[in-house]
Length: 362
Image 1 (cartoon, one colour):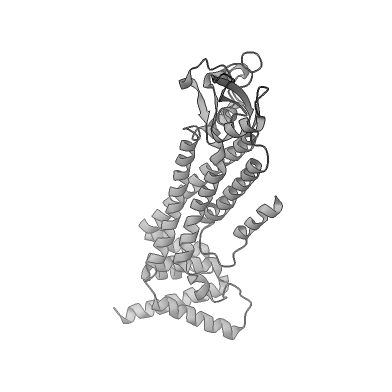
Image 2 (cartoon, helix red, strand yellow):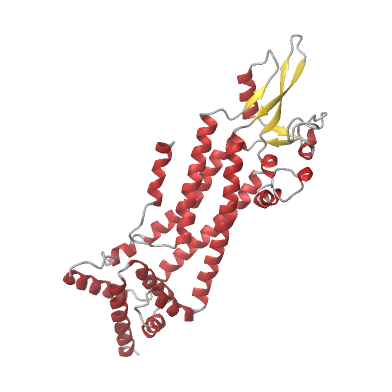
């Protein structure tokens, strides 16, 4: 299992040049690895272990019944979850259906869980892939190793000069760079909300309230308790198999099926419920924060000064006033990656040259 999951560590390796936000990486990388790990574990349990075991009558092949019940579906009786297990019903949700087809609750999701998790992982990775394609290693190219302060003075001077010349030559041309990145952050929020609706539909409308019901389960009276994890992911279900008898009459066989895979599923999805709620909250706050940056130019100098305290408020205000939001964002990201002292020198000199150029071209 370690060899199977060990390759995912490449997605979480440390980045020397950061071109995005921590919440953005949590969505794109950590959530992707989390979903792929869950998919691999469930796939291994499903196709290597024994995902279903059915109790069958004598004369029926157990392996064939197991396969049949797995690839078709099993069912429970929802009202049987409210009865006392061991006295009124054999197991939670398992009771006589009395031929009432409409009262059965069928479970067909379990063979699709590993594929759905993999699809969710691909969707979570898409904003990262899209941003990497648009970003094109721009920051890494213009930083030129200035993220490390220990370098020769001559090399440092040449690189600072080249960086300042680039920023002056491309001033007011970075708006699309910033807007594309913020679009990818919005895409993350849309993806998380969309996946919440997907999982809710996948589990027949049971997922939205799943975590809340699990939390409130321990506070309910013993006689009123209905374990939501057992209700959504039943451990024992029923399966009906029909075959021809010796005289050609169709015979109906009831089987009691144990689903050990649902032990893994219920723990996986309770963790995913909490994680997705956390991610949706963080991404919603992040999108609001980006909207404020766009709508309120007055907060940009403060953020630039907060990013690097070596830059004075006056310099931050001057450079923010003479540049557009895309240029401000590039400078802000440079502050996250460059050596603080080198960054102060670059911004101070850039502010002077922009002011000089503005005064020469009134």
